[in-house]
Amino acid sequence: EIRALLSDPAIAVSDVAKLYGVSRTTLYKWVGTVQPRVEEL
Image (cartoon, rainbow, N blue to C red; front, side, top):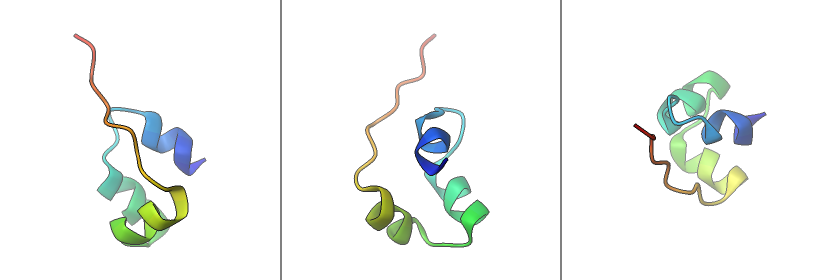
């Protein structure tokens, strides 16, 4: 579920971290690196 949220370019990593009550650092430790997202025009 976290990976699905992180794959959505409209949702910021910090928003996902807040949703789960953790820091961005903790989220990165759980998930690993997140691929840069480019929003298509």
